[in-house]
Image (cartoon, rainbow, N blue to C red; front, side):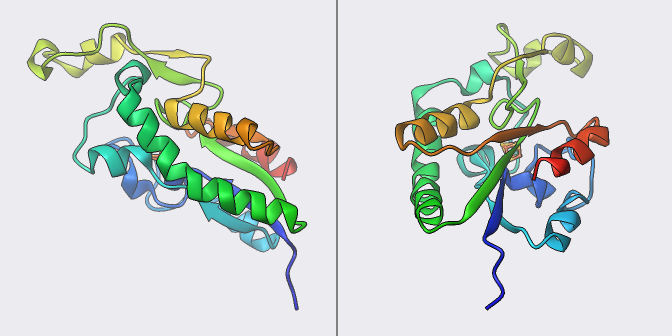
Length: 181
Ligand code: SF4
C-alpha cells in the first residue's frame, strides 16, 4: 500500500483563510504552497483555529496581551490535547512529523513574532481610527499564545516536532520552508 508516512502540521488558516479576522486575509482560500506538499506526497494535519472557536468569525483583531489570560490558554490546551495524542501515536508508529507551520505575526499562532500592545483594551470608541490602533501594535519576537501552549504540551510529552514560522506578507521565504520539509 502506498503510504509515505510524511506529515506536516499546519495552523488552521494556512488551508482555510476564512477563519481569519475579517479583512486580514491576503489570499482567497488556501495558501498556494500546499500544492507542493500534495505533490511531494506529504500528508497534512490542520490544527483548529483557536480565535474562531473562542471568539467567532465577527471578532476584532487582538494583541497577544489581550489573549494572554487563563481562559484562552486553557481553551487552547483543551483544543490541542487530542492532537498531542495523535502526534504521539504517529511518531511511535514510525511516521515522520516533519514540521508545524505557524503564522508569524498572529497573537495566537505566531512562532518567530507576534503582535503586541500594552495599551490595547477598553471600548473601541477610545480608538477613533484604525491608524491609531495600528500604531499601538508592534511586532515582538515571541510566540503567540496558542503556539506557546502547543510548544509546552510538546515538551511535556517529549515530542520533538520543529516549528516553521510563515510570514504571509513575505512569501519569498516559502522555498526555504519547503526545502526544510
Ligand atoms: S488564530 Fe491562528 S489559525 Fe486562526 S486565523 Fe489566526 S493565525 Fe489563523
